[in-house]
Length: 269
Image (tube, rainbow, N blue to C red):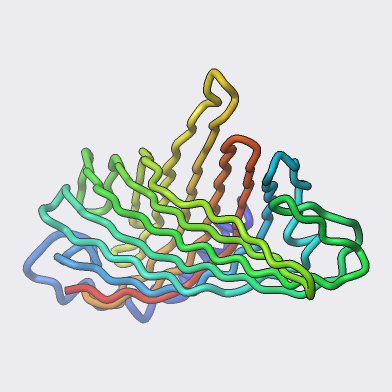
């Protein structure tokens, strides 16, 4: 993590000489460059390393714990991401994020696995498709706000829609899990230069296992990023994101972790 933070600072400081002059022309506000806006829209590319394990039961047949990387051969891919922040007032923001995540692979199994009640033998290659649509709807209240930084509380509803499909020449089975998950967390931002900001945020929701051992879930989301604001209206961003989702419903279980760097641009008005 220390190496990641250092890399963010080096990338950001590399743009400082070009963008620093923009701050001198501001006459309407004492806020840092990039903090004068009503709506902010960001587009990003994220290339996380996947760690995905899923177990699926059907017809009373307990499924295998399937590693989608070592068993099914999915590989690191790049995904697009959209973020929108609407600023209702200085300390009040409404946030939206959409990340469509898709993996596909074809692999020869090294062991027989059971998925959704069906056995997939070593002798037949398996096609895998994983579709994960991740939405975030949030509200942010910055209880501390200064011209060169802020600290805030984040309340969110995360909507997750995951479908995993395995097929060979004989069978095709899939599992589908979706639903909203509430989350709470914190965000903080500081400016290391008039137009360069470092931001960190963490949101989470742990659901303890119930009395009958049927339900358990957790959702952890950590984001650390640096932003270079060329003007109040245009900026560039690079960051590190860690996405950690776990669910246990009856005999079905999923443990999905995505961690990696991303980069993109921002426009504001």
